[in-house]
Amino acid sequence: MKSPSSSSYITKAWVEFMLTEYENKKETDTKVTVKTYSIRNATKPGESFNAELILLDVQAVLSGGEGPEEAPEDKEYNLIVKFLTKDPLSCELIKRCGYHIKELMMYSEVVKELNDFQAIHANDEFRLDLPEYIYGKCTEKEYVLVMGNIKVLGYETNPKREGLDFLHAKLAVNHVARLHAVSYAYDKSHNFIEKYPCFQFSNAISAFFKPVVWASLANSITFLKSKKTYEEMVHKLETGKTTLPLKFAALWDDQTRHKFLCLTHGDFWNSNLMFKHGSSTVNEERSIESLKLIDWQISQWNNPVFDLHYLLNTSTSFEMRRDHAEEILRHYHTTFTEATTKMGTPVPNWNYEQFKAEFERTSLVGFLMGMCLIQGTLSKAGENINHTGSTCLSNACCHPCKVVVDKIKTGIAKVTVSFAFKPSSSYIMRACVKKVLSPIGQELVEGNNEVLNGRLLDLLMEADEKGVLDVLTL
Image (cartoon, rainbow, N blue to C red; front, side):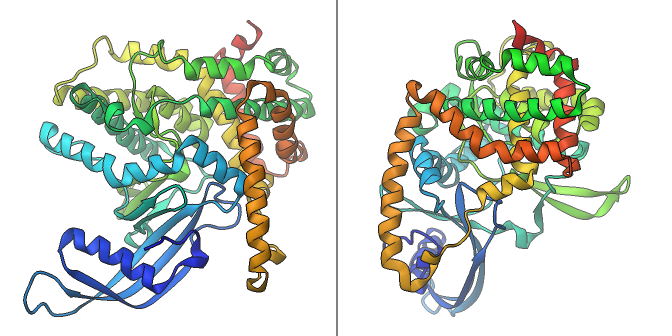
């Protein structure tokens, strides 16, 4: 059966087909008959630009099965359905980079393969936890991913404006250390990339990140100039602004200099961590029962320290990093080392000092990731950029016109994305991205968003104090 391309095309027949496929993996000849179903948006406007996320709640009856007189069974399903974004430009970029394929592979095959491996070699001690995979389809013209809705089980994301405290960050790095360690150990005997070539490292991220770095840097310079007390820092940023994106790409892309490679999450920050809390408290903080990682579109075979940079610089406060960063990094290294050793694949010459040296060598990457993501996720202007809103073409009676317009937009998007990957387009892309992100710069100057301004200023000052910005003048 053809999969729906968006929430507007979900039908009862497809829901029955999809759930019957799911149930038959557990017990053959099971039939799912839908009594009622409802759909609603899973995100608020501006919260997601790379996908359409839908909550699908289903009341159904299960019949058949292997038993000769199996009684019908009522069952409720609470699901998340993920489609490609409706925005043609973002959709074409995702397809060009294969992000959607990687996420579907993670849910449908990779995590199960890695979990089976670590269960054999480490007695299931380093299990990777994701929402349950229900159904997926990926072809040239179809894409849909259906997962269990873990919010109904009590999981929730930590508010992004608060950032992660020590206990939440510690648990997060424990889980990403498992991912790194299990994939590294698995690769030693199974050749991960040969089996899953879609996760091969690609410089697509750095190619598109360069103009974002440049535009975010321009916003940061404008912001600091408005303060009139950071002349030296402004000088460093202005001196290095033309080479800064190139320095980022050099650190990110140089696979030969990284100590070792493994499967990385790639988008390892606050909003992609879902915690389940208990009823008890520790030092007036709710206890944490478990964690599940979501949103695997940017996962790839890369340097594991980048996931740590991403988390610390995008999702924690300066105070948390000042007081606990060392402990968090030591916890990560201990977990990773114990896991790889238990699975019989310890990394040679990778004691804590060597790990820390690699972390510090790539610290510019962490700073730039933080600078860009803080501006994009904490600003009101950023939400407006992501929110395309509805138009007159959303009306059902205008559907034929909308189809034509969408095809035109898709054609333009293909040309634009293809153009963006060409080195000769760098100047034009930089100007376009700067124009799109300039409202964030204005918001920074106005100073009404205290969380945004505070987190960005802390990150800039911390990078300067640690000497990260000194590399810009070299």
